Image (cartoon, rainbow, N blue to C red; front, side, top):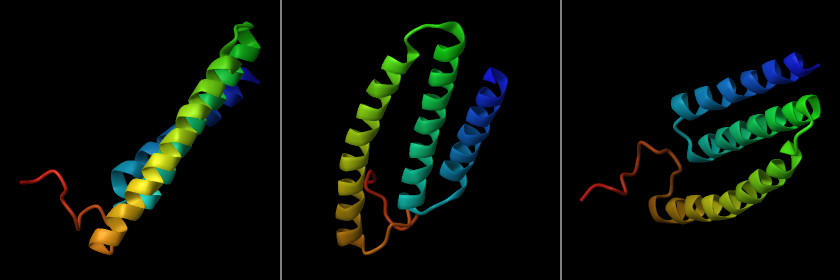
Length: 97
């Protein structure tokens, strides 16, 4: 059971990493980061059930951070879309002078 959950978590994390590296749409990249956070949550819960530590408490902290990140991240993406009229990350460069 533990090994299956950890393998699933690793697969989800790799899919999320691949999505962040390959896709150029900011919303898809954002969803892939959320997929990575959920993969970490799955591994924390699986390890806490197997070992008996309180890993489930950390899941609540990760979910809280993910919710705050979702609110702030979507607000930033909407602001960028209103300014540039696209969410393609190659189309805008905010950090260049």
